[in-house]
Image 1 (tube, one colour):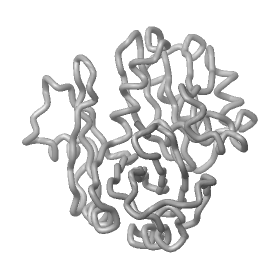
Image 2 (image 1 turned 45 degrees about the vertical axis):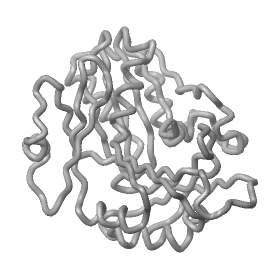
Image 3 (image 1 turned 90 degrees about the vertical axis):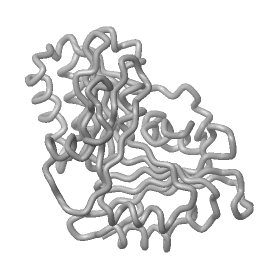
Length: 281
């Protein structure tokens, strides 16, 4: 069943139809997030997050529920930025990338499935990496039937750039974004990206298992690895407590502008919504 799990609205009472505000949509396998960017600023006006079960809810159910319940979608927007937070992704070095084979890249790792749309984009680093990913045709159709002037991108594109630009990337460094049912993890060693991957979790223990398994696969010493956390995670939770015990230095990501969403910070820790707020540029 689709349900709304986060609903934060500004005190701004009047918004004219098709104003200069931009709608930002983030879509994962189990959630839909709606963010309103105010005009040409980096200020955030509202945030809604919807949770759903992909085994029981199809994309029509998700968008129908959001349309019926959302205060954000009752407004008009003349531009929409959609970020896909989906796991069927392949990273291809620019020197090996061929646009004519983007389907082959994804199918080689994730297999062949039904009717899909495959997309790619460059991260914008040196040497560059191409993020190649696929989305279902049904999701693609729902996006373009519900929103206007749609521009799309995968969240990995910003995530990778942020991880490599971190001051901690000079050593061994894990960057982790927490969502309601999954995490996105990036491992950087001495300035080089080793892996970015999404992991679904059903119980908190799964998170610690995935991180320890990743550490073992890449042969990193957890006692010498820094970890940056952000997203839906409390500092008294099981994952945080155990990550803090295991790894060298564990810290929450800080926002460069905590005024971006002041109202949210009155009730939640600063790091709580950063994976969504960092999409606002």
